[in-house]
Length: 213
Image (cartoon, rainbow, N blue to C red):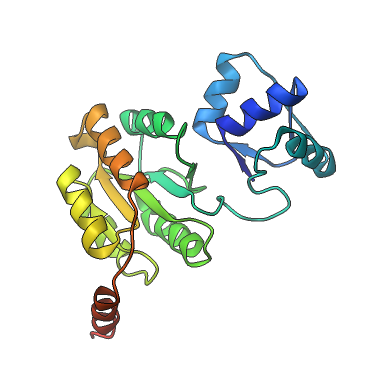
């Protein structure tokens, strides 16, 4: 159960306080918003939260379900202390639903993080994912082993645009040590805002190669 900064704002504006269901989590941007405004986030029975959310007129992400992310969201994961990348994600969270993968930020957890993204995408609970890693080779190979994922390396805006246009890429891999904050923000924004549609011909080719030994 994940709540965004916008949802907290709506709840506080309508009710004068913020109470979330037991076990709920905040996006990084939501946590920063509450901390900056010195707003104490309370936790209570799910029924109480439903009434407050209804009054606020904001979607209750994950309430009453086991979804890791709302439909249409993008999941993200870092393999280490990617400060600049997290700052870029926080800036975009104001416009796009971005939820962290609940997997430890360690390189050895890469496969587990990818599996989690693939599961959510296959189930229709997420639109795609963003993998922030030191080096992208392993991430690209592993992610593209999953039938529900089409991963590309975000080396620049042109690469992202081509990846979305040609294969409707739904996973973006960024080598964060090699990029400054503005670069990360730009490729992320271009990726999550893009409209993607996999053509029948490209889908046929993907299915054909999936049977390769």
